[in-house]
Image (cartoon, rainbow, N blue to C red; front, top):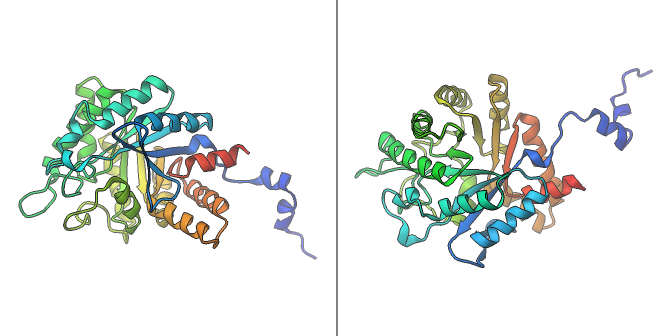
Length: 325
Protein backbone atom coordinates (compact mmCIF):
# COMPACT_ATOMS: atom_id res chain seq x y z
CA UNK A 1 0.00 0.00 0.00
CA UNK A 2 1.36 3.41 -1.01
CA UNK A 3 1.49 5.93 1.84
CA UNK A 4 3.25 8.81 0.08
CA UNK A 5 1.15 9.97 -2.89
CA UNK A 6 2.38 13.38 -4.19
CA UNK A 7 -0.55 13.44 -6.63
CA UNK A 8 -2.88 14.27 -3.74
CA UNK A 9 -1.42 17.80 -3.83
CA UNK A 10 -2.25 18.08 -7.54
CA UNK A 11 -5.84 16.84 -7.55
CA UNK A 12 -7.58 20.22 -7.89
CA UNK A 13 -6.77 23.74 -9.02
CA UNK A 14 -7.43 25.00 -5.48
CA UNK A 15 -4.90 22.62 -3.93
CA UNK A 16 -2.38 23.23 -6.70
CA UNK A 17 -2.64 26.97 -5.94
CA UNK A 18 -2.12 26.38 -2.22
CA UNK A 19 1.11 24.41 -2.71
CA UNK A 20 2.52 26.45 -5.60
CA UNK A 21 6.16 27.31 -4.84
CA UNK A 22 6.87 30.10 -7.34
CA UNK A 23 4.52 32.97 -8.09
CA UNK A 24 4.71 35.47 -10.92
CA UNK A 25 3.16 38.94 -10.72
CA UNK A 26 3.06 41.86 -13.16
CA UNK A 27 5.26 43.76 -10.69
CA UNK A 28 8.07 41.30 -11.54
CA UNK A 29 8.18 42.50 -15.16
CA UNK A 30 10.23 45.14 -16.97
CA UNK A 31 9.08 46.16 -20.45
CA UNK A 32 11.83 46.96 -23.00
CA UNK A 33 10.82 49.59 -25.57
CA UNK A 34 12.40 50.96 -28.76
CA UNK A 35 12.02 54.69 -29.42
CA UNK A 36 12.49 56.49 -32.74
CA UNK A 37 12.38 60.10 -33.92
CA UNK A 38 9.22 61.65 -35.29
CA UNK A 39 5.53 61.49 -34.48
CA UNK A 40 2.91 58.89 -35.25
CA UNK A 41 5.64 56.39 -36.14
CA UNK A 42 5.01 52.70 -35.51
CA UNK A 43 7.51 50.51 -37.34
CA UNK A 44 7.14 46.73 -37.05
CA UNK A 45 10.28 44.69 -36.35
CA UNK A 46 10.09 41.71 -38.68
CA UNK A 47 12.19 39.42 -36.49
CA UNK A 48 10.17 40.28 -33.35
CA UNK A 49 6.48 39.72 -34.12
CA UNK A 50 4.25 42.12 -32.23
CA UNK A 51 7.10 44.48 -31.27
CA UNK A 52 7.51 47.95 -32.79
CA UNK A 53 9.84 50.92 -32.94
CA UNK A 54 7.67 53.74 -31.57
CA UNK A 55 7.89 57.50 -31.76
CA UNK A 56 7.59 59.26 -28.41
CA UNK A 57 3.86 60.04 -28.69
CA UNK A 58 2.96 56.40 -29.33
CA UNK A 59 5.52 55.15 -26.81
CA UNK A 60 3.80 57.19 -24.10
CA UNK A 61 0.48 55.56 -24.98
CA UNK A 62 2.13 52.13 -24.78
CA UNK A 63 3.50 52.96 -21.34
CA UNK A 64 0.04 54.07 -20.26
CA UNK A 65 -1.32 50.65 -21.22
CA UNK A 66 1.52 48.94 -19.37
CA UNK A 67 0.84 51.00 -16.24
CA UNK A 68 -2.80 49.88 -16.27
CA UNK A 69 -1.50 46.29 -16.26
CA UNK A 70 0.59 47.04 -13.13
CA UNK A 71 3.93 46.78 -14.97
CA UNK A 72 6.18 49.01 -12.84
CA UNK A 73 9.19 49.61 -15.11
CA UNK A 74 10.29 50.22 -18.69
CA UNK A 75 13.74 49.89 -20.26
CA UNK A 76 14.51 52.30 -23.09
CA UNK A 77 16.54 51.64 -26.24
CA UNK A 78 16.90 54.46 -28.78
CA UNK A 79 17.05 53.94 -32.54
CA UNK A 80 19.68 56.39 -33.79
CA UNK A 81 19.63 57.58 -37.42
CA UNK A 82 22.72 56.66 -39.41
CA UNK A 83 23.69 60.31 -39.91
CA UNK A 84 23.95 60.82 -36.12
CA UNK A 85 26.31 57.89 -35.57
CA UNK A 86 30.07 58.28 -35.40
CA UNK A 87 33.16 56.38 -34.27
CA UNK A 88 32.86 57.51 -30.63
CA UNK A 89 29.07 57.46 -30.34
CA UNK A 90 28.97 61.11 -29.31
CA UNK A 91 25.19 61.38 -29.71
CA UNK A 92 24.98 59.23 -26.54
CA UNK A 93 25.72 62.26 -24.32
CA UNK A 94 23.71 64.84 -26.22
CA UNK A 95 21.40 66.41 -23.58
CA UNK A 96 18.79 66.94 -26.30
CA UNK A 97 19.15 63.45 -27.76
CA UNK A 98 16.17 61.21 -28.30
CA UNK A 99 16.79 59.09 -25.19
CA UNK A 100 17.04 62.09 -22.87
CA UNK A 101 13.90 63.62 -24.41
CA UNK A 102 12.09 60.35 -23.85
CA UNK A 103 13.18 60.05 -20.22
CA UNK A 104 11.94 63.57 -19.47
CA UNK A 105 8.60 62.99 -21.18
CA UNK A 106 7.93 59.72 -19.36
CA UNK A 107 8.78 61.17 -15.95
CA UNK A 108 6.46 64.13 -16.61
CA UNK A 109 3.53 61.97 -17.67
CA UNK A 110 4.14 58.83 -15.58
CA UNK A 111 6.24 59.84 -12.56
CA UNK A 112 5.44 56.55 -10.83
CA UNK A 113 6.96 54.44 -13.64
CA UNK A 114 10.55 53.33 -13.10
CA UNK A 115 12.61 54.35 -16.13
CA UNK A 116 15.72 52.30 -16.89
CA UNK A 117 18.14 53.55 -19.53
CA UNK A 118 20.81 51.51 -21.28
CA UNK A 119 24.40 52.71 -20.90
CA UNK A 120 26.34 51.35 -23.89
CA UNK A 121 27.54 52.86 -27.12
CA UNK A 122 26.42 50.29 -29.70
CA UNK A 123 23.23 52.14 -30.77
CA UNK A 124 25.33 55.27 -31.34
CA UNK A 125 28.56 54.05 -32.94
CA UNK A 126 29.06 53.74 -36.67
CA UNK A 127 30.83 50.38 -36.17
CA UNK A 128 28.24 48.81 -33.83
CA UNK A 129 30.60 48.04 -30.94
CA UNK A 130 29.79 48.91 -27.32
CA UNK A 131 32.88 51.04 -26.89
CA UNK A 132 35.57 53.25 -28.36
CA UNK A 133 37.70 51.40 -30.92
CA UNK A 134 41.41 51.96 -31.62
CA UNK A 135 43.18 51.85 -35.01
CA UNK A 136 43.58 48.05 -34.71
CA UNK A 137 39.84 47.56 -34.23
CA UNK A 138 40.11 46.72 -30.53
CA UNK A 139 37.60 48.06 -28.02
CA UNK A 140 39.50 50.15 -25.47
CA UNK A 141 38.36 49.67 -21.89
CA UNK A 142 39.35 52.82 -19.99
CA UNK A 143 38.64 55.23 -22.84
CA UNK A 144 35.20 53.67 -23.20
CA UNK A 145 34.48 54.14 -19.49
CA UNK A 146 35.02 57.89 -19.86
CA UNK A 147 32.26 58.03 -22.47
CA UNK A 148 29.95 55.79 -20.42
CA UNK A 149 30.27 58.15 -17.47
CA UNK A 150 29.26 61.08 -19.68
CA UNK A 151 26.32 59.04 -20.96
CA UNK A 152 25.15 58.08 -17.44
CA UNK A 153 25.37 61.67 -16.21
CA UNK A 154 23.27 63.07 -19.03
CA UNK A 155 20.64 60.38 -18.39
CA UNK A 156 20.64 61.24 -14.68
CA UNK A 157 20.17 64.92 -15.50
CA UNK A 158 17.16 63.95 -17.63
CA UNK A 159 15.58 62.24 -14.61
CA UNK A 160 16.26 58.54 -15.16
CA UNK A 161 15.61 56.22 -12.20
CA UNK A 162 18.22 53.59 -13.08
CA UNK A 163 21.21 53.57 -15.39
CA UNK A 164 21.99 50.13 -16.78
CA UNK A 165 25.57 49.72 -18.04
CA UNK A 166 25.42 46.87 -20.56
CA UNK A 167 28.87 47.30 -22.10
CA UNK A 168 30.86 44.81 -19.92
CA UNK A 169 33.90 47.09 -19.57
CA UNK A 170 36.01 46.41 -16.47
CA UNK A 171 35.52 48.96 -13.69
CA UNK A 172 32.66 50.87 -15.25
CA UNK A 173 30.27 50.41 -12.30
CA UNK A 174 32.68 52.12 -9.86
CA UNK A 175 33.40 54.96 -12.30
CA UNK A 176 29.71 55.59 -12.92
CA UNK A 177 28.82 55.38 -9.21
CA UNK A 178 31.54 57.81 -8.19
CA UNK A 179 30.61 60.26 -10.94
CA UNK A 180 26.90 60.13 -10.15
CA UNK A 181 27.61 60.72 -6.47
CA UNK A 182 30.02 63.56 -7.18
CA UNK A 183 27.32 65.31 -9.22
CA UNK A 184 24.63 64.84 -6.55
CA UNK A 185 22.82 61.90 -8.17
CA UNK A 186 23.05 59.61 -5.13
CA UNK A 187 19.46 58.52 -5.73
CA UNK A 188 20.08 57.06 -9.21
CA UNK A 189 20.38 53.25 -9.16
CA UNK A 190 22.95 51.27 -11.09
CA UNK A 191 21.32 48.22 -12.65
CA UNK A 192 24.41 46.40 -13.89
CA UNK A 193 24.50 43.96 -16.78
CA UNK A 194 26.76 41.71 -14.70
CA UNK A 195 26.82 38.43 -16.59
CA UNK A 196 26.18 39.42 -20.20
CA UNK A 197 27.18 36.59 -22.47
CA UNK A 198 28.45 36.75 -26.05
CA UNK A 199 25.24 35.12 -27.18
CA UNK A 200 23.75 34.11 -30.53
CA UNK A 201 20.34 35.22 -29.21
CA UNK A 202 20.79 38.97 -29.74
CA UNK A 203 20.19 39.07 -33.50
CA UNK A 204 16.65 40.51 -33.58
CA UNK A 205 17.63 43.22 -31.09
CA UNK A 206 20.42 44.37 -33.40
CA UNK A 207 17.88 44.42 -36.24
CA UNK A 208 15.61 46.58 -34.11
CA UNK A 209 18.34 49.15 -33.44
CA UNK A 210 20.14 48.85 -36.79
CA UNK A 211 23.32 48.28 -34.78
CA UNK A 212 24.86 45.29 -36.50
CA UNK A 213 28.64 45.01 -36.22
CA UNK A 214 30.69 46.32 -39.11
CA UNK A 215 33.67 44.15 -38.11
CA UNK A 216 34.81 41.63 -35.51
CA UNK A 217 32.70 40.33 -32.64
CA UNK A 218 32.05 41.14 -28.97
CA UNK A 219 33.84 38.16 -27.44
CA UNK A 220 36.66 40.24 -25.95
CA UNK A 221 34.23 42.01 -23.61
CA UNK A 222 31.06 39.89 -23.38
CA UNK A 223 31.33 36.60 -21.48
CA UNK A 224 32.08 33.14 -22.84
CA UNK A 225 28.84 31.09 -22.87
CA UNK A 226 30.81 28.12 -21.52
CA UNK A 227 31.64 29.88 -18.24
CA UNK A 228 29.68 29.85 -15.00
CA UNK A 229 32.25 30.65 -12.29
CA UNK A 230 33.25 33.80 -14.16
CA UNK A 231 29.75 35.16 -13.48
CA UNK A 232 30.45 34.91 -9.74
CA UNK A 233 33.61 36.97 -10.22
CA UNK A 234 31.79 39.61 -12.28
CA UNK A 235 29.02 39.78 -9.67
CA UNK A 236 31.47 40.19 -6.79
CA UNK A 237 33.19 43.04 -8.64
CA UNK A 238 29.96 44.84 -9.60
CA UNK A 239 28.61 44.58 -6.06
CA UNK A 240 31.87 45.85 -4.55
CA UNK A 241 31.87 48.75 -7.04
CA UNK A 242 28.36 49.87 -6.10
CA UNK A 243 25.78 48.04 -8.22
CA UNK A 244 22.26 48.07 -6.75
CA UNK A 245 20.90 45.29 -8.98
CA UNK A 246 22.78 42.70 -11.03
CA UNK A 247 21.61 41.05 -14.25
CA UNK A 248 22.06 37.83 -16.20
CA UNK A 249 21.58 38.08 -19.97
CA UNK A 250 20.24 36.07 -21.79
CA UNK A 251 17.91 34.31 -19.36
CA UNK A 252 16.74 30.86 -20.50
CA UNK A 253 20.12 29.46 -21.64
CA UNK A 254 21.64 30.67 -18.34
CA UNK A 255 19.17 29.57 -15.66
CA UNK A 256 22.05 27.81 -13.90
CA UNK A 257 23.93 31.12 -13.68
CA UNK A 258 20.88 32.86 -12.21
CA UNK A 259 20.59 30.10 -9.61
CA UNK A 260 24.30 30.31 -8.72
CA UNK A 261 24.12 34.06 -8.24
CA UNK A 262 20.95 33.71 -6.15
CA UNK A 263 22.89 31.46 -3.77
CA UNK A 264 25.85 33.85 -3.68
CA UNK A 265 24.23 37.23 -2.99
CA UNK A 266 21.17 38.79 -1.32
CA UNK A 267 21.29 41.64 -3.87
CA UNK A 268 18.31 41.82 -6.27
CA UNK A 269 18.87 39.87 -9.49
CA UNK A 270 17.27 40.55 -12.86
CA UNK A 271 17.31 38.42 -15.98
CA UNK A 272 16.72 39.48 -19.57
CA UNK A 273 14.57 37.27 -21.81
CA UNK A 274 16.27 38.57 -24.92
CA UNK A 275 15.05 39.17 -28.45
CA UNK A 276 16.12 35.77 -29.77
CA UNK A 277 14.33 33.94 -26.98
CA UNK A 278 11.17 35.94 -27.67
CA UNK A 279 11.49 35.47 -31.44
CA UNK A 280 11.90 31.68 -31.13
CA UNK A 281 8.76 31.33 -29.05
CA UNK A 282 6.76 33.61 -31.35
CA UNK A 283 7.95 31.81 -34.51
CA UNK A 284 6.95 28.44 -33.05
CA UNK A 285 3.57 29.87 -32.07
CA UNK A 286 2.97 31.29 -35.55
CA UNK A 287 3.74 27.89 -37.06
CA UNK A 288 1.27 26.20 -34.73
CA UNK A 289 4.00 24.12 -33.07
CA UNK A 290 3.39 25.31 -29.51
CA UNK A 291 0.74 27.01 -27.39
CA UNK A 292 2.35 30.44 -27.54
CA UNK A 293 0.80 32.11 -24.48
CA UNK A 294 1.38 29.11 -22.25
CA UNK A 295 4.97 28.67 -23.49
CA UNK A 296 5.78 32.34 -22.82
CA UNK A 297 4.26 32.13 -19.35
CA UNK A 298 6.14 28.90 -18.61
CA UNK A 299 9.43 30.33 -19.81
CA UNK A 300 9.13 33.44 -17.64
CA UNK A 301 8.04 31.34 -14.66
CA UNK A 302 11.20 29.25 -15.07
CA UNK A 303 13.33 32.41 -14.92
CA UNK A 304 11.60 33.46 -11.71
CA UNK A 305 11.96 29.94 -10.29
CA UNK A 306 15.71 30.00 -10.99
CA UNK A 307 16.02 33.00 -8.68
CA UNK A 308 15.44 36.19 -10.66
CA UNK A 309 13.57 38.90 -8.79
CA UNK A 310 12.62 40.78 -11.94
CA UNK A 311 12.50 39.92 -15.63
CA UNK A 312 13.02 42.00 -18.76
CA UNK A 313 10.67 40.60 -21.40
CA UNK A 314 9.18 41.95 -24.62
CA UNK A 315 6.06 39.97 -23.77
CA UNK A 316 5.51 41.90 -20.52
CA UNK A 317 2.05 43.29 -21.47
CA UNK A 318 0.84 39.91 -22.71
CA UNK A 319 2.05 38.12 -19.61
CA UNK A 320 0.65 40.79 -17.26
CA UNK A 321 -2.74 40.57 -18.97
CA UNK A 322 -2.83 36.76 -18.67
CA UNK A 323 -1.84 37.00 -14.99
CA UNK A 324 -4.61 39.50 -14.28
CA UNK A 325 -7.15 37.14 -15.83
